[in-house]
Image (spheres, rainbow, N blue to C red):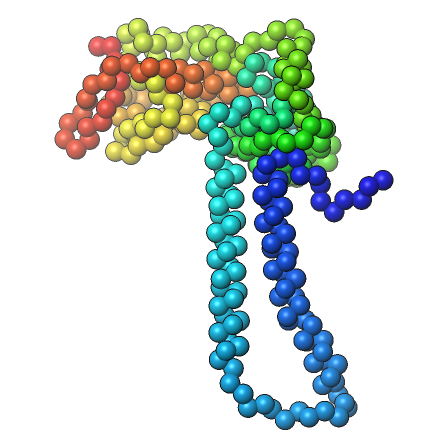
Amino acid sequence: MRFQVFPDAASTTAVQVDWLLAFLSLVTLFFLGIIFVPMGVFLYRYRRGNPVDRTPLNISTWKIEVFWTTVPLVLTFVIFGWGAGLYVHMKTPPEDAQEIYVVGKQWMWRLQHPEGKREINALHVPVGRTVKLMITSEDVIHSFFIPVFRVKQDAVPGRYTMEWFKATKAGTYHLFCSEYCGTQHSGMIGWVTVMEPKDYQDWLNSGSPQETQIAAGERLFHQLGCSGCHAENSKVRAPSLVGLYGKPVPLEGGTIVTADERYLHDSIVMPAKQIVFGYENLMPSFEGQLNEEQLFQLVQYLKHLGREQPPEYRRQGEGAAQFIVPHEAP
């Protein structure tokens, strides 16, 4: 049996994290050496009863003081800059990342691919392709942890969190929940299978065809009556959703937010939280009527709408609060 201090590094991020950890370890060993080695020597040499000269030395210490001040200061800035840069990198996924939805629930992980393929306590991904995980929870806080990729992210109820990676080695690796979430927390484990692109595509196409996330979201959009107010040909005065995703949204009170996943999710379950400028608080809440998987499907469809060509814009408002808003039907 092979003994490992650290798990394999199977992603591009893992290599960068390991280099930072190695540097921190070397810095720690360096300071341990210059502190504890002389301490041990002095404890032995100047122990009680040992006949040595204990006359205080009259020497200048400013060079020593400058050294022990500047060197740790420089190392601290290096560590901060390196760590902050790596953190920003790990929180900024590439634009072409493949999105996979993850929901934590006592005590299992449910995952869904954009093509509709579903998994429980398992994740299949291709080698060499960036994968972005959109994570949430249906009950308590969980934490999605893949040691070989060096990525870990909390799954928080009512909120979307994100982690991404690019796998570099095919194989099967452990998946854990690293946040105590109840009596069966230790059993909330699974496997990540990294496959060659062709094998992954074959796996994705295996089994019976399933409804894609966008198609499921569109179906819900019409079933719930959302299209009655938000469709382009609707006569109800409601904000347009076409061309919305990723754009600034002016709110009552003068603030502006970005129409990201969090905004879309909250607008469905808490529509009174952020009222779009120029509109009334008329939308009903769908909290408790949809589970997190259905909410994510709706969000995916709204993102799809949000990437389409926006409608004609016109100015609305008076005075300083003049924002550009989509033209709505009279």
